[in-house]
Amino acid sequence: MILGTAGHVDHGKTALVKALTGVDTDRLAEEKRRGITIDLGFAPLDLGGDGVLGVVDVPGHEAFVRNMLAGATGVDLVLLVIAADEGVMPQTREHLAILDLLGVKGGVIALTKCDLVDDDWLALVRDDVQSLVAGTALEAAPMVPTSVVSSRGLDALRDALARAVRAIPARDAADVFRLPIDRAFSVRGTGTVVTGTVWSGRLTRDAAVRILPSGASARVRNIESHGAAIDAALPGTRAAIALAGVGVAELSRGSVLVADEAWVASTTLLADVALLPDAPRPLGPRTSVRFHLGTVEVGARIVAPGGALAPGARKHARVVLDAPVVARAGDRFVLRNASPLATIGGGVVADPAPAQRRARPWPVDAATPAQRLIQVLEHAGPLGVSMASLPVRIGAQPEQVPSLVASLDSARRVGDLLYAGAVVDALENRFVSLVDEHHAAFPLDPGAPLQSVRVRTTPNPGLADLIVSTLVRQQKVDVSSGLVMRHGWTPTLDQRARSTLEGIARILEQADREPPSVEELEQQFGPDTVSVLKVLERESRAVQVAPDRYYATAALDRLEALLRSAMADGREKSPSELRDVLGVSRKYLIPLLEYADRTGLTQRRATGRIIGSRTPSGPRVSAEGEGIRLS
Ligand SMILES: Nc1nc2c(ncn2[C@@H]2O[C@H](COP(=O)(O)OP(=O)(O)OP(=O)(O)O)[C@@H](O)[C@H]2O)c(=O)[nH]1
Ligand SMILES: [Mg+2]
Image (cartoon, rainbow, N blue to C red; front, side, top):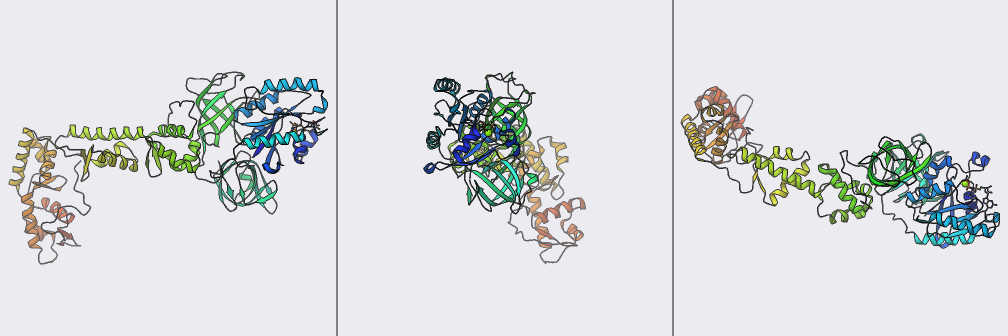
């Protein structure tokens, strides 16, 4: 578990950490010289039976609030330090506001330097502090008077911390691993080392890791916690990780070490954003602010529906970042003003990698993973959401994801992609109306070309499969030989169409082995010709031999019989021999022979043809099992 200090400059945070742990966390020469903390310091605090707390000591000076943020962001507990002689000061307030924005749940308040004040004064300071923390997460926190000079209150402080630790649930190790990097350096003989607080998951030696946002990969060479080698880094602990395969130049505070494909870096987030009541002015979409999440700090703009965010208001908004950031749904972040430097607000990430399409504003309370799943699916629309991304996208542990998805009646899954039920329903309706439109436009057609209806419904073949199989199962449509039709649909042949059909059939039969082309028939019989030919074909009275030519079935049977008997000797026949056999001109011969090849009646050789494998009663289908398509 991680304990972070907080409080105004010079109020005794570092001295108190030293008194509790024996470690002087001010390690920089400049810190020694100026007597203030500049960057984060780290020390283990052994609470005996209650385990070891990783202490992160932060600077109180107003110029280093960004460093304080990098340290405060992963903590479970806070030690708010207020010097009894000075009382509540500006960074006492700012740090407290930041801890509230970060959602820190519990802590202890230390009133330091009590050796410098008398009891009456101390009582007044207590009252001040009590009204300061009213309404915050520290409202019920114990307040312990201390002094590192007299050692007053140090044991009571330890006890209070141990009680606070017991009240906080441990983080689960069965989660996706993430460590926001707070330091990166190179150690002679060891190589690249990064340190940070493990936010979630567990990391073992030799694991493959990625560094985001750069995307560099590395291998874990060694892990230490507070200077001791360990086998696994656990959530809620400090870790120093030696990495192989990555140079220190590729790493810095703000990079994130991850070990799961679900993690991505994104320059846009959806979030619930709140502006503090004492923010100096409304926050418009063009105002640049500093965005702090984990150890990263980047410029950002907040684009909220309905215009600027007023002080004290909370809205669902789009956060547009100057550089990619690694976030997870449920993460807290803090917003600061660049000048004058001040903390102005913060928020909770609703979707860390939203689909690049216009989002309807979400309700601000999409707070649980289940609610987020609904929102994420709805927003993704026909693009779908990958199952593998869900632990990060909705902030759920990997093992919770399957049951979350199963509990959503309306979610539909295709391979790794998940779609909102409403999205799939709308596509199903679209599919059915495309079929209906085809039936209305071509009442003589047996159906619409399946492939074209699929593609016009969705470009995603897996989703199209799901839609077709659902509609077939629901008996809304039927699929046969590459066509799709409404269930129970039969082409309607009215009086006129029936007489066209009989007219065309007669012409084909009379024309025998040299029938007119489709175009010639159209000139005579009009626009129904193609549909009528298809009906004739379905009724086995005509066969489409070439894209532009149908034969009467009886005529084609006679031609096939001629071919068969001529080729019975097994000898290869040249085209001109076959022309004599069939008694047709060259214009008809070539399409006929190609048809015979395609349907297996003949087989093409270098200079001629031999008999194929199709038997006289065998089906006239092409090798690919597909007929010729005119449309
Ligand atoms: N008399 C007295 N002095 C104290 C006590 N605790 C700290 N100090 C002094 O107060 C000064 C500041 O202490 P630090 O621990 O550096 O304060 P800090 O809160 O860490 O300061 P920053 O990290 O710069 O914000 C030092 O000179 C300490 O010796 C105390 O209990 N009694
Ligand atoms: Mg300090």
